[in-house]
Image 1 (cartoon, rainbow, N blue to C red):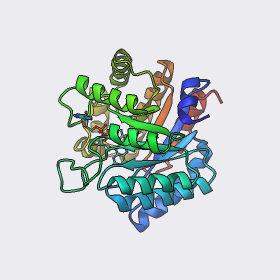
Image 2 (spheres, protein in one colour; image 1 turned 90 degrees about the vertical axis):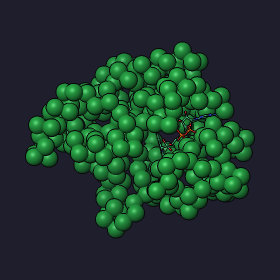
Image 3 (cartoon, rainbow, N blue to C red; image 1 turned 135 degrees about the vertical axis):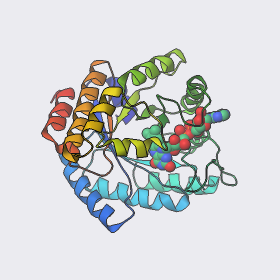
Length: 295
Ligand code: FAD
């Protein structure tokens, strides 16, 4: 069964973890440790982000190969349109399939550093929906994930319009949606209801990040704005000089979110662990994930 079929079957919630290709020696050491340790979490799939430009597909596929070698059940490369012509995307998707991978997260991608607007490559795609249509035509057997934004994509004038464009990705052939991170479950439940009302029926996997500090939240909100509940803000603020305490506050917040999301019918949890394994191996989070999977 592919990921979408497993999410649809909803026999039990799926757990997935996102990795990114490290860029420095320290980053590589952190990735190696996290990749080793998180095998113990036995995620149903892991995904690997893709940076800007055609050359970024190489590191993503290298990391996919490493994760595959560690025995992860299913490895999902991200593929973006940034700096990619149609020919580049043909080559990249063919390489993904030749590597034996059966899923792709199909994304438009963010503009490269220093650029504020997305400009498609010559003969490339402007929107992820075009990439989805292209991939479905070239590799009909692939299972495709796409991004969803419970608090709307920053460029979208309204959540209604953003969901209409999300529907275009679904109509083009997307099989499941993974959401941008959020800290307030109400925004996820509201988003799912709006998507269903728009006729989007595919699974919507919530993306969660166990936050570690108010500073981290503020850094992230610079490029993807999300609502920070007052209580979390207050508690993290009070723990500003105690990093270990702040980390536990973020961890418990994530645990609460996970329990409520699964009780509320979410088909699983996608964890943005930022190539770090320590948080996931806090016994409480591990126990919570085992509980929601019914293990
Ligand atoms: P799209 O779905 O194309 O949407 C982009 C914007 O265009 C939205 O505002 C949408 O409303 C609008 N739009 C869409 N279609 C139309 C249309 N026909 N007319 C007018 N407007 C339209 N980025 C990376 O660089 N690498 C990654 O690996 C990566 N992984 C991600 C994983 C997840 C789960 C998520 C949630 C995001 C990820 N991102 C990644 C970030 C993502 O690439 C950015 O948010 C990017 O700005 C939008 O990508 P998209 O695929 O959502 O684009």
